[in-house]
Image 1 (cartoon, rainbow, N blue to C red):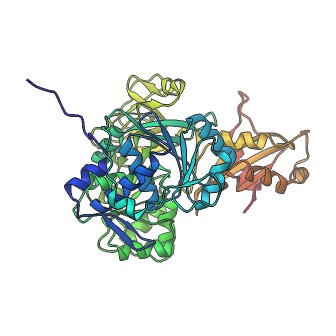
Image 2 (cartoon, rainbow, N blue to C red):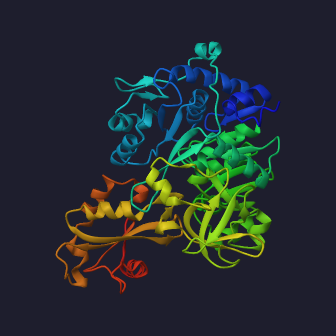
Image 3 (spheres, helix red, strand yellow):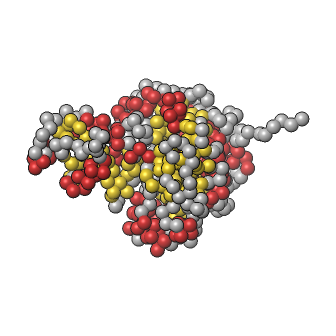
Length: 518
């Protein structure tokens, strides 16, 4: 009698891998020059899991992680997977006000921090706080692995189901409040599998992780390397000189970067080693100039289009394709279907622009909010809000980013959130927020503000607002990458005939008269 297909994975990915290739190198800490085999790393996860069970217990629990990129992040992640706990990565660059909202909306059962974020964690959490470092505050317990406990720990992994929510990740929305994306174990495994078919996998692969692990682009290499049985090399923070050294020293074969990082490497005179097979370039569009520089320097760059909602990649162009069809993000990955539709939701002909709708096993089952889920999904799948087209060869070309979102240094900024902060300043009556092209960061956040009172002469408009006080107001409420880097002051916002803000006119005014800030 047939029992039907076996759902896989049946337990956490690291436990599977440690039993299959125990002696292969799992993780390298590039900052400390330490490494662990899969069986050694598995033992560390058991020890962390035992400590973690003091604050979270199983699939109904949610664990916030307020850590920057480091090996301890990977330990917490796999320990949570081992017990079926839902992981909620939090952005360490955000302010207390921003994090308080996220902690409240996700109803965390515990929050993991490090020494650098301990004070912030204590300020925002209404749940137990534990640290991967030696705690410095009363009431904060330590999760640091005890060598004696590591040797004796033996935790049985809980069974996992493919449709079980495993991650809750935040993404910017059009309303100004970040949406909470549900990602399942099945989403992550499907994404890793599809990526492997596109990029390839070799036994000697070493994927460098130097992106923030609280973003999908930084977490994906850790998950994928474990599934493949290859090595992930973790560098705590990107720096052109040190990252170039790590790529050379550790025979890196693949690395995920945002365009700003790649540009900085090239500016520092970096030449890729023979070991490097691919540079997965995402988070923001790559300029023609950058792609040309990559080709001249022999950088095997693969521009990619992806979303948090799809557990990373949707489409990826390989280096030879990038050279022949500059600007494309390539064809969709295996098992990922992309439909280009018009405003009525009907497919458009090849070459015609429309909204991209994505379906397949990598696509989230929905947001934590049912209302947001219903608004985003249609009969053909997830409506991305991105405008693009497909050419005769099936390659995708992205024309506009969704909802006027600003992407600065690989970080997404929702203009609505910045707008609300500016409007709450006592001296501002109206404001408009746009992204301006920036050679360093891809885009920079820019704002045109109208002082209270109106009818202000353009020659004295700038003097009517205390810009230092306005920026201090922003600093208290926004992460640094969200704060306006260019500000202009006007007596009124330019509007279209229908009365809506003319964003292109706003951009032009800021380019002509905006004040650059540091």
